[in-house]
Image 1 (cartoon, rainbow, N blue to C red):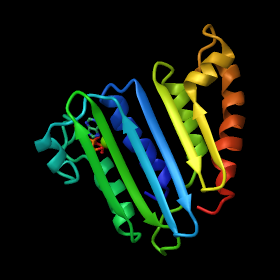
Image 2: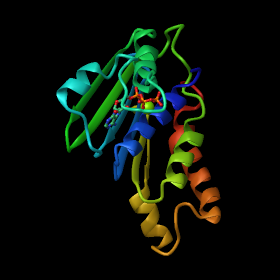
Image 3: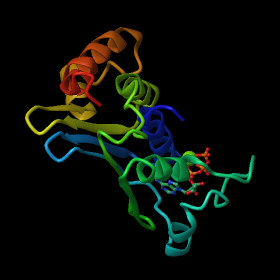
Length: 184
Ligand SMILES: Nc1ncnc2c1ncn2[C@@H]1O[C@H](COP(=O)(O)OP(=O)(O)OP(=O)(O)O)[C@@H](O)[C@H]1O
Ligand SMILES: [Mg+2]
């Protein structure tokens, strides 16, 4: 996997599979500390302690189509191979919080990649799920709160509507992507 954005997509897909109704995604860069923190938090079905303990092992999965689950191990690997760290907390029936941290300047840190495209895809393809996405570089902070977007658009217009896509695309670019100015 060459882009952190694809890791984010994979982890958010776990949240969707877990039946999450609200997913929070945060990307925070601290240039002074040379540190990047990515967090995905959901209110899905969560995991029990035994599952949580095994989950960063690539041979742990509840999928029946194939035996190896790679989403979490790859996210973990992306952080640990870039001078960072990884953690996952989960509570059965409450939700899951997955966090990966990176040394920004580390030679093996993957670029953020098409973060805007991933968020656009998640938001438009899952109109029944609330997303709260935050991007910050410490000075500037951008937020996409689908609940707020729904209030602006009115309840009859779905976030999956074709005409909303352009608006969301621009909003995401301006508020979540441009913040980083290509630095991560
Ligand atoms: N947010 C979550 N909420 C509840 N369970 C989760 C969550 N994330 C992961 N899991 C559990 O952990 C398992 C491993 O997740 P992982 O993403 O590593 O692999 P996968 O989703 O099974 O397969 P892949 O991501 O390769 O398609 C999942 O099958 C699921 O049972
Ligand atoms: Mg997965």
